[in-house]
Length: 270
Image 1 (tube, rainbow, N blue to C red):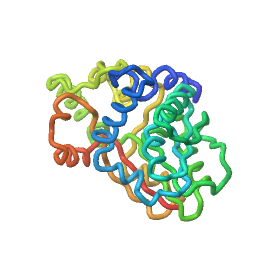
Image 2 (image 1 turned 180 degrees about the vertical axis):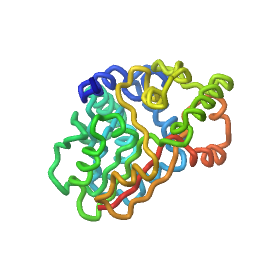
Image 3 (image 1 turned 60 degrees about the vertical axis):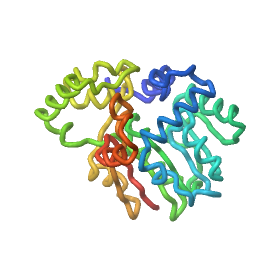
Image 4 (image 1 turned 90 degrees about the vertical axis):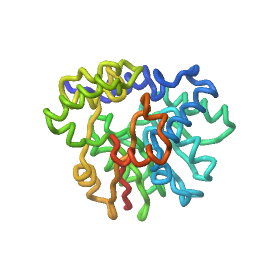
């Protein structure tokens, strides 16, 4: 039986983003600070402004899949009128807790990205970073983003990228061997066994945890095609995982490497 949205909800309630690899006490001010540091300086290196340009000040912005609230903490101080949703009630609780700790105000609720609880043409911009590849009907999420955007509105949405190494069984086998030899392994959330995944699909699914029920990867062309109703669709790669060795490299070098990263972000206008 294929995984359902309830399976997705249960997984992210058990292991919200950041749990298992951010070393501080979950939900503490220190945990949120370290989460944001890793996110901004490594995961989003080179594309932070692609998702959230300064032009969002004063605009109504929807965060689809807010997780523990990184974009809430980033966008609200910028002056955006922020609204966040997540399918995981525990993630919503964490996001709200972080705003309480920082004295910020934002609207955050539990909701399904496949059926957004908003009127058509309600938002000037939508951000969804690394979320809709974890849901059964990814295209439904994209269609919902289109529906709630106002004419001329801007969407910045990212998913896992599917490079040649995930398309070729030979390259995939060589990559797994290299990961084991070089010790380039993700830790926490049961990911230590990623190099032993027997298929590329299982490997992708395990990016966020061994028990993650859904994880999909897309090429540039596949992801842009999914945004066919939008205009001026562009895409670029980013994101190198936070692993030993990589963190010691100078930021300019990491920024160059990230252009060959494991995620692809689409920027599209309605």
